[in-house]
Structures are given as structure tokens and as C-alpha cells.
Length: 312
Image 1: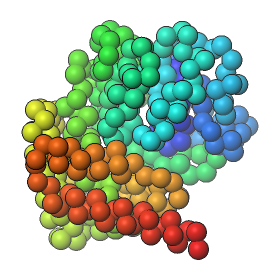
Image 2: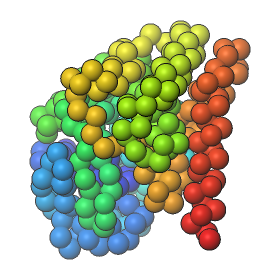
Image 3: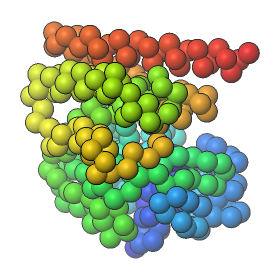
């Protein structure tokens, strides 16, 4: 049985841990002590699209893990914490696990490769979840294929994990180069997440207001031009899910995006690894992105204003 470490057991980390634990020996590491205590005491509870309670090993610090060995370490912390997360698990890397990132934003696989000599795999997931309370994660979206492939190393080094994910109920496409899928998800996140923050997490505002629909379309077109300028061949239309929701083929739901959730909870957002990354890359390439840059600026203001309100 493969041994998997999930680093960051919040929304997506908790979701992945619960699914993979059906078929593998899974341990989770998270700095939220109350969350870890609840998992140890009552199990990891999923609600929403998945209803389950999973018993698994949970650690609040890498020191607790001693000399454990893992076949894979899946990094699911916020992008800005990737380097610190990797450094924290250094003692358990002697077994040379493959490092895997399904994180939002750009720069995560580079951070893993720069700070280790291990095989690194990267990919994207269209699952969505929300951390509710210690020990509890609400599963919001389910069913679309994940994509997984090597950033350093061969496809074979991560093929077993793709197969395991699919068998666990998280259908996964294994590809030699997942950058087209990663950029597709990046564009979706870079558009929908800051817009979701601007409309205060009210998902209906992204779909029901004609001006917001036009704004989203303009942003997407600009972001696609940046990908094209980089020579990236997109694996799918980044806005295909948005189009399905607009047509009524897929219900829109109430998920306003992770950035809105982070602002509401007082957490640092991944704006810089998403929309900020595209704005900076566009400037390097000389590609004009005036709408995207304006929304990026507004989202910075929304994040700052929320912090001021919380501080009183």
C-alpha cells in the first residue's frame, strides 16, 4: 500500500486526504492545531457533495513524524507558503517521495524544484471545497477530470498516483506535459477569483449581471492572449465551465471562489500567484491587459479594506 503525505489539510488537502485514504496509507500535516486535534479525535468529516468520515494519521508539525517514509508528498498549502512547507518536511524526504502540487497559481513547481532534487509532478484539479471548522470540510464541486504530469522526472514516476486518484473517485488524466491544463485553470482562477472577491463572494453576481459577464469575458480574452504569447497551447477552453453555467447546462451554485473565502476568513489570498502573475507576465511580454490589471488593482483594494475592517 502506497504511503502519501498531504501537506496542508484544509479545504483541498482534506478532500484529497479523505479520497486517497480509501486506497492508500495517508497522513496529513497541518499547522492548524485545532483542526488536527479534531481529526485525531473524530476523524476528517466531509459534507456536501461527499458525506464521509475518514480516520487517518494527523500531524501538527513535521517533528512529530520522526523518520517516516512516503511515496508521495502532495503539497496543498497556499502558494505563498510552498517554500516553508517544503522546508518543514525535509526530515521525511529521505525516502525520496515524488513531490506533487495541485495548488492554484504559478510558481509552485519551480519552488519545489529549486529547493530539492526529487522528482516533481504538477497538475490541476477542478474539485472545489471549503474549510468549515476544525475537522470538517464541505465538498462543493465534484466530477471534472484532474490533470497530472511530471515537471521533473518521467511520467512513470507519477503514473501510480494518477491511477490511484482515479480509482479513489477523483478521475485524473495522466499526461506528459500538463502545462496546457495548468494554464487553462490559471486563467479561470485569475478571472473568476478576483471578480468573486469584488462581488463579496456572491456567485450570482458573476452570472446574473450583464456588466459582470462582459467584464469576465474581456479578462479571459486578455489572459488567453498572454498564454498565446508564451507559446502555451491550452488543453481546454478556460471558461468552459462558466459557459455551461450561463447556458443552464450546469447549475451555478453558491461557490463564490476561494479568494472571497480567504478574505472573509482573514487569510492572505493567492491573488499575486494568479491574476498578479498574469499582469506581471503581460508586462514582460508587452501584451496589453487593461481590464485584467484594473480588476487586479480593485481586488488588492478589497483585500486591504477587509483587513482594515477586521482590525477595527
